[in-house]
Length: 89
Image (cartoon, rainbow, N blue to C red; front, side, top):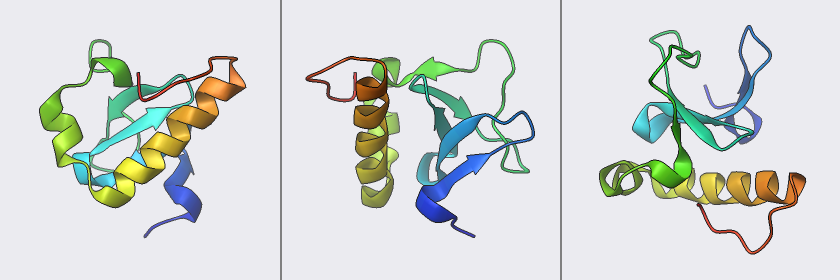
């Protein structure tokens, strides 16, 4: 069920990277959203967390594949908006 780079566009045309190992996705603003049962991002108020504010448990639960893709995703998005020298925060 993996798609190219696990990027999906939901019904709202939100470009996200799906992180199956933690049941989440991350959008182009580097904000994480939980996934609904149908695999779409949960856009409810109060459930989104910027990747820089996630906790050690969340990062520790990422598979090595998801962690690698997440790192590339964040770096690419930071470059897109002009942030340099970035890690995951």
